[in-house]
Image 1 (tube, rainbow, N blue to C red):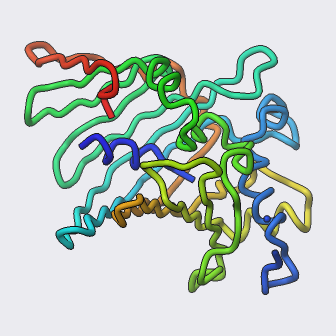
Image 2 (image 1 turned 90 degrees about the horizontal axis):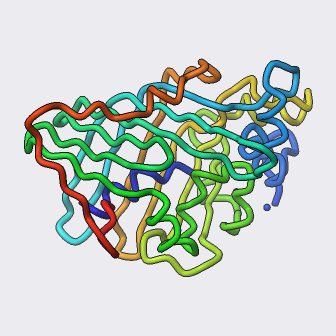
Image 3 (image 1 turned 60 degrees about the vertical axis):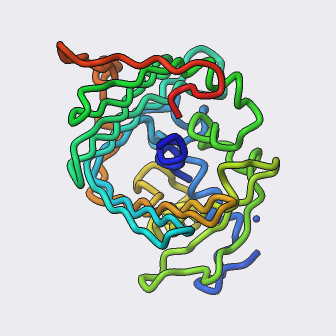
Length: 258
């Protein structure tokens, strides 16, 4: 369960693309620029970036050792909160699984709740302590989507495009990680074209899918659909309302809820 929640959080780049002379840097910029702090802070202008999003997701996890595949789907929501002059936002999220069973993973950027209704349990973790203990782990990229190349080396995946012409990037952690061996991102081609031809960002949500592979060969694929962004999701939406009569589990040390 611990690895599953880490891989869940993983949502997410420099060659030459065969289509329209688009370079690897072009694709990387189209992916990162909508989340850069200066762009996000320009909300309401022509250069406005992406500060929240919500939509459907499909997840497929493959456990290599036993050749077992698990599938799930539901609703995902994110909010990036930039405060003051910081370059790193507070990342708030809510993953609401509807299949194969109902569960929720919610964070207000300070606390994370993993709610398992069937077990009548909620696992509560302190995000700040987790971040401090794992400060060298590249999975902290969720709070720095505008600076992915800082934590990852980026190259073309093989193949470098899907059947619809969307470019695929492969990211490798710059530091050794026991949770990620590689991460692939399928980038929406319209977002790349808009960046290259019109010097625009924020008109398209750039992420279509992510594929995470850990050092043991286990993989988790997440596909996004019907994504709506810059909805103005409130911070209160990312607070967990604890039902009465459920057990509260508070992991400590290395077992901080992941």
